[in-house]
Length: 98
Image (cartoon, rainbow, N blue to C red; front, side, top):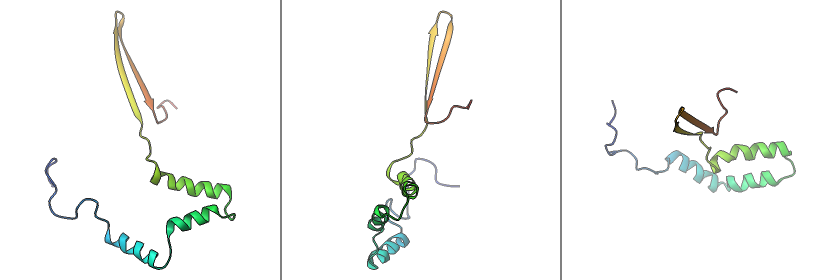
C-alpha cells in the first residue's frame, strides 16, 4: 500500500533530477563530436531523402515539440415549457456513431 494522497514526498530523487545514465550517454556523444540535433538538421536538409521520408521524420518529432490535444466535451442543459433539452458537443475525436 502506498502513501495516502496529499502527503508530501519523502526521500528519493528530487523532482527534475536528470537520469545519470541519460546524462552519461549525452556526455559521451558530445565528447565524440556527435551533436544529435545538428546531425538531424544536416540529414533533413540533404538531397538524399525523399519528401515522404523527410515528412515521416518530422512527423515523428512533432509530439516532442507540440503536445497532443485531448478531446473536449461540452454539455449544456436548457429548460423550456415543453421539457428539457440537453446539448453535447465533442471536439478532438471521432463521434461514437462513425
